[in-house]
Length: 183
Image (cartoon, rainbow, N blue to C red; front, side, top):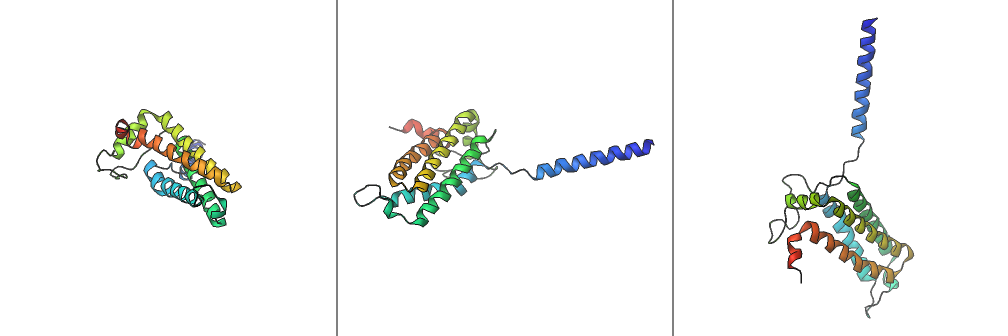
């Protein structure tokens, strides 16, 4: 009887351990900041700006006729990807900039930060970083609205805003030492 209880208890522990392991295996890893920027945000925002720039006519006015259906579709895809990644970063309790030994963009250049510096900047102000990521998501939402309605004037407006959102975050977290050098 005692042996049977020990076997049941052991089987229960093994099953619980297996379930816990399986649950851990199904977790989606949190995106790292450097990878997010290099693989999603920079290419996506470049597409967003490129499409917005093509929607300007020779008189420097917004003109939806300058864009193709493929341009609008590319804009939707890029905007959704940037928005989704920004929201994922905003939701993280602890943002990891990069794996150890990873050299981030501009590292080694004059006035540039390294991953450890950027990590310290974010760790010092995690709520501010989260809000910056939400601002990026909101800017991407503006592009989505413009793309879904094929509104070139809205596209021009949100393109200008995106530049400010990016610069604001970079000055606080990527290269704050340069913020003091701004006019």
